[in-house]
Image 1 (cartoon, rainbow, N blue to C red):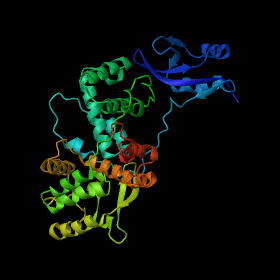
Image 2 (tube, rainbow, N blue to C red; image 1 turned 120 degrees about the vertical axis):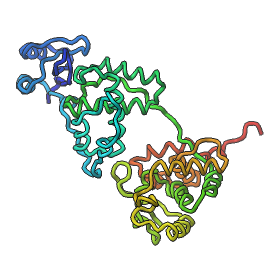
Image 3 (cartoon, rainbow, N blue to C red; image 1 turned 60 degrees about the vertical axis):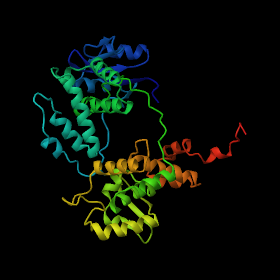
Image 4 (cartoon, rainbow, N blue to C red; image 1 turned 45 degrees about the vertical axis):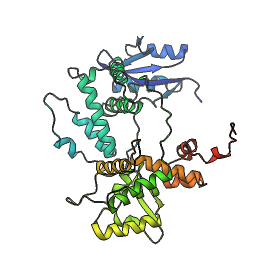
Length: 375
């Protein structure tokens, strides 16, 4: 087994694509590198580099064969296609109004997102994030932008008090263009990401949720809020539900192609089923469980948000309530009632119980066993 290794990196130096060669000090490796075409040292990247072309890549493998293992994990892109995703819809990109002198996302960026079958929500987030970045450097050729330019842009976002998730999305979109579209994996491998925030989910009490449900304007709104809470659904999962997904005999709901392209079942509450039957007789949906009464298309995400916010306000809840808070409350209340965390994981559609364990930090059932120090 070879104990020497050389790691290949994508570098961009003096407007040229280069191959960076990273290795531990070794006389044999250093001697072989001197035999490569015009090797140079980069102070910025702290490594040797040569021009990136096919003959030089082949030469590297020839030179180090039997001497050192070539680590290509950072150099060659082997990301698999998201083959289970539904067809990516980019019609919104073509049809949207664009301001004069606005720099739009390159076609190849969009084409690669389509090819990789990224979800529609990810496509929109990447496009919007990348367009904000390229409009910040409107007069620059995209190929000439370097790591320092990206750091300046990220510092701007920090100064604007953007969230860590917003900044991470910007980094992902930028890296996607240079690494996936231009074929330079890990070119910006040294860009620092903000530390991951450790925030606890916000939850409501059962009493508050019941009050919100009772403060809805009609049976349709009541069913929407009741399902979000009693079945632990994400907003998009609720909107994707079709009539046949409701299994009243087994008292379960089938959630198809949820986050991570996974199907799952979740619980169907008896009282909610009764309300849904009343709703169905009045509204008569044809395909989706909740449809726009005019167009017949599935209900909009913004409408669901408005229903939750307005009903919470009518209920006298002072904090702003979102659909996802109902999902958080579902998981927390199950945990507090003694439901095994592995069952909660399955109902929520989490890959691991590690994700579900966040609710152990907000469940208060165990706090009742702690002695009151002031009594």
